[in-house]
Image 1 (cartoon, rainbow, N blue to C red):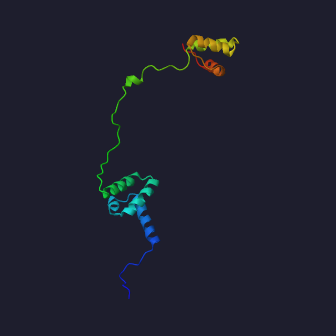
Image 2 (image 1 turned 30 degrees about the vertical axis):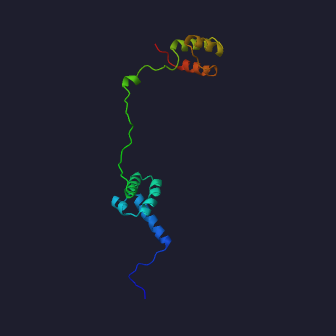
Length: 153
C-alpha cells in the first residue's frame, strides 16, 4: 500500500521550471521578504534575469541578500569622487581665442577677390595681416560667406 498523503513526485524538469518561474518573480522585485525567503538557487537564477531586464533595485536586493548569506557585512555607500572641486564662474567666462577673422581682413579679401586676384595671393595677404589664413581650397567659400555677411559698423 502507498501513503496517499505524500505529495506527488515531480520530475527534474518540473522542479527546474518552477525554479525559473520563482526566479522571474524575484527578478521583478516583488518583495524583500520574498527575496529573504527564497532559496539560494532561485536568487542565483534571478540575477541574470533581473540584469537582462535592467531591474536595478532587485539586482541590488538580491546581491545584498546573497552577501548576507555568505556572512559578509554589507554597507551601501554611494559612489562619490574623493575630492570635489568647483570651478569659479569667472575662470570659465574669460576671453577665449576668437574664431574667424577681423572685419578689416574680411573686407580686404572680398575687395581683392572683386579685383580678380588669385586665391594664393589673397591667402598670402591674409597670412601677412593676421598670421593665419584659411586653406587655399576653402578660401573661395570663405570669401562668399564674408560677402553675404552684414558689415559691422
